[in-house]
Length: 228
Image (cartoon, rainbow, N blue to C red):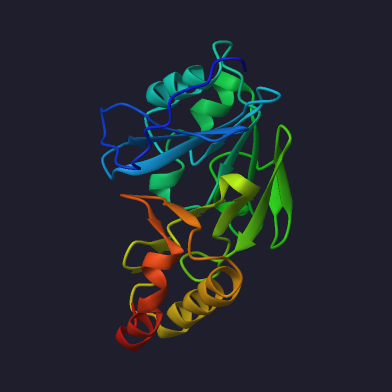
């Protein structure tokens, strides 16, 4: 892609509002909010190959198709990854598959609950490619059995982590008062994310504003003590 987009990214988006764009040297990250539950959808565009990957076809297929066209005038979409099977994250999945022919991927434990056939069932440590870039699959058990995060280690462009509903500013995802599920989720979030990634890692959650691991790290014990 010859054009160099201006990077003015803040991570603050609203339903009905414009896309926010993060322009790294080799990957474009677009964030849009959709649906009545203010879900975030992320479009990753490889600046080398033009390949595109959508994270969470949550709602409003028409808006998501416009998002895809922002990255590719030909509406190319190679892959849709769903972070987990909750209803608000899959509302537009079938429509987007029909419209684009994209292949689908999701955590293996959540795949049977998806509204479409999942082409690739993901497990912890798997790698998904978007053009020349590797996205590492991190299984985060607890919010749902098959919840996943995707990690792009961008070198000089930093580490970028898409967490679905497993990690937000201020805490981990909902476990509905189930202490076993909470302990499982917080344990995975600590050992698989905080214990191995630096503070500067940027976190893109399934709803709301972004954060960094450095902002959240001091509060891990507080989350453990409160139990949510």
